[in-house]
Image (tube, rainbow, N blue to C red):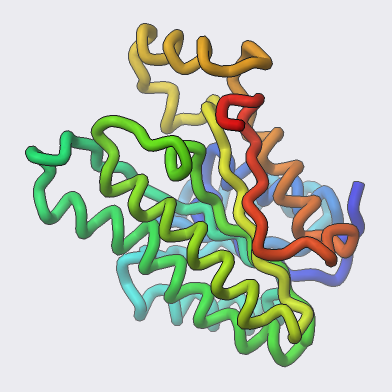
Length: 247
């Protein structure tokens, strides 16, 4: 267990999967947590789970394609829970398709949500961390950002961009005691991967030396560590949580 007592965290895409597990892990380690997603009902259900752990929680609606919604969500979290000291950029969408068949609107939607949205949200929160002279930003990228994958040029471009953004922001804000790291999950059992065909799932498992898919709690534990004081000398890094799938 890591002590995150006194910290306020914001987790995007926190209504299910890795986001939900991360929000709960941060709360279990003492943080108060705001859960942000496009589905407010699902966010509120996760917020209730956090409150049951004895922590303060807030559900906020926020579409990462909207700069106005991002600004409003951050302002509400800061007003109701306090300055945000931990940011987990987890929310992402997929609109897969082969390169020559991919529609421009599918490219734009994924880039806008998965990359530009992370930029806009981080930009809103950095002034709070700068003032506090302490911050933890954890960005969720993906194993495919490093290995490539057929039919995901938009998703992979966004997730690879997050790695670059992580390193750039880490360098800019290290002097303010703000660390910025990325986590690259491999094949994790979540609602997003549950729809995969059995053949695709078996092919994925065959590439994993540990011979099992990861769980959302595997990723959440890594986030909790990077959010803690114990990880205070780690910045600009990509932590692979993939069972050895990509080495």
